[in-house]
Image (spheres, rainbow, N blue to C red):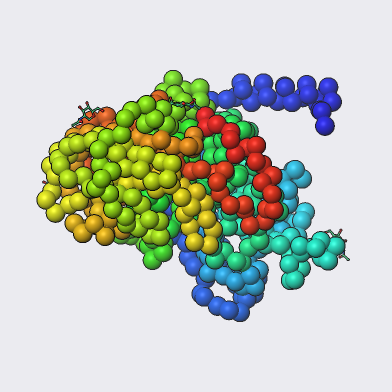
Amino acid sequence: MLPSQPLLHTAVFALTILQALASNTFIAAVYEHAVILPDATLQPVSPEEALALMNKNMDVLEGAIKAAAQQGAHIIVTPEDGIYGWRFTRETIYPYLEDIPDPAVDWTPCTDPTRFAPAPVQKRLSCMARNNSIYVVANIGDKKPCNSSDPSCPSDGRYQYNTDVVFDPKGKLVARYHKYNLFRGETQFNYPKEPEAITFETPFGKLGIFTCFDILFHEPAVILVSELQVDTVLFPTAWMNVLPFLTAVEFHSAWAMGMGVNLLSANTHNIGSAMTGSGLFTPEGPVAYYYNSETEEGHLLLAELSARPRLSPTYPPPINWSSYATSIKKFPGEKDTFSAAVRRDVFTFTELRYKAGNYTVCQGDLCCHLVYQMSNKSKDEVYVLGAFDGLHGSLIKYHWQICTLLKCKSPDQNTCGQPVEMAQTTFEMFSLSGTFGTNYVFPEVLYSGVQLAPGEFEVLRDGRLKSKHATSKPLVTATLFGRLYEKDPLHPLRTSPQHGSLAATRAP
Ligand SMILES: *[C@@H]1O[C@H](CO)[C@@H](O)[C@H](O)[C@H]1NC(C)=O
Ligand SMILES: *[C@@H]1O[C@H](CO)[C@@H](O)[C@H](O)[C@H]1NC(C)=O
Ligand SMILES: *[C@@H]1O[C@H](CO)[C@@H](O)[C@H](O)[C@H]1NC(C)=O
Ligand SMILES: *[C@@H]1O[C@H](CO)[C@@H](O)[C@H](O)[C@H]1NC(C)=O
Ligand SMILES: *[C@@H]1O[C@H](CO)[C@@H](O)[C@H](O)[C@H]1NC(C)=O
């Protein structure tokens, strides 16, 4: 439907005001929260007990929100599962859920708490936003009753959704997002029937939102960036770190670079479940990040970011990820390959036997090239160049194309691909490239001790991931992590690739 003339004028006028108020930068905050978990129980607790636990968590979040606002933050993101944890069945999470209305109803729970069903959590979050004049992003649970008029209605008569909410600085509900890519084991929740691409305008750019496992898939993550052109993605997550390629700060910073957007990533903090690693990530690299597997405490991160990164003079140019790799002859290395598994994925590897050299290794349609020089190779460390082109995952499968320079766990080749955090070898230089069949490639560089390498590497227009100078710390991995979304099996609720044409959209 086309908007009527007066409506259009109002919209244009509103846009002009927004632009007049618009600022070039904003201060963003993320809070890594050590969530207080409920006791594991098979019996649902009472709504009062559920609220008491959620209030304990919100007491902590309130402290972080106040502190962020006092330091000038315009927005704060808090983690997925940050208000009640994740140890639930469908029945035991029920007392924690609230009916969350569509933001189109124009509702400020802080000033009008009883307009809908009881909503003490939404009310409190709304008041925290309003009292501190700051956008508050949180993750809570939504419940929606249904009945036999809907053939997919669950037998208990309700849908339950893992849901992100955003309240503006007046406390108004401005966004609601139901998580589309549930992680295995998240059986307390339902999939929404359709993926939701949720965006909203602010004086500091157009924002989009999704959660955790969503970041690995096309819908809605890629749609938000490539089609809806958001400037900043809000990303509440409860991310379990998995070396060598899927540690939170490593992958999330690489995604922001590969997609060319800001990503405000707030992780849950739970050392027992390997959850730590939050950050403020930009197309140019990480501005601030946090990783700490020693403490049980939460942590607040703040930084000033560009509101419209695409308009920034430092915005990286578009990249053709296969241009260099397809233009050169293969380097040697293929004679000497071996196979080893990174978790369940069998990679083709070749060992970097010398202090410097040029190698190529191929698997499937992917050939990876590496030019490198080590500064101080330790005798008991083995590095490899590896390639993987195939479906990753056990229950939920999706297609990866990966080129990686990787430190092996031990000199035994069978350990190549096993998790390793520490290294001793620094590199004078490296340059990694691959014949990728996708525009969606995420450049990862991870140093010893799960540290990032901001400013120490670049991606050239022709797709080479290059060190700018000698690495300041020993290297664990440099990886080009590619996603071939169009080869993914269908989402569990899909019977046909409804958005087939979208699969080929180009990265910015
Ligand atoms: C917000 O401020 C009001 C009035 O100053 C106060 O009563 C209320 O407790 C505050 N709420 C929060 C969540 O800070
Ligand atoms: C069934 O659900 C629909 C939609 O939620 C609602 O309009 C209708 O009144 C419900 N019917 C009964 C019998 O509860
Ligand atoms: C990328 O470069 C390759 C090799 O030069 C070329 O064949 C291909 O068409 C380019 N892709 C795009 C999207 O420009
Ligand atoms: C490795 O490649 C680089 C540039 O791609 C080239 O300058 C160098 O001569 C090559 N070295 C060897 C030993 O082939
Ligand atoms: C190489 O240099 C780095 C940084 O200077 C140092 O931490 C590391 O221990 C050195 N490694 C070896 C094998 O000497």
